[in-house]
Image (cartoon, rainbow, N blue to C red; front, top):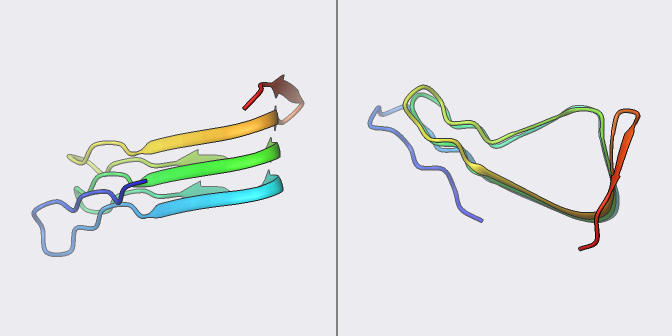
Length: 88
């Protein structure tokens, strides 16, 4: 996992690091590690047995900053009404 890099502006910020580890994770909102003012996106790692995602997950770079990385490791993944199964 890595922080996003800041841009050249004094107020620029790179995205942060988010690591979630649990038996079950339900996302109904927004998980974000975005950059700010030309900063690059950070990184998000999600590890669980069951992940239900009804929200958003982002690690986006702002304007000139590159995008970050997102990794999801789970046995059962649901997005809305869809269900996907994958072994870790």
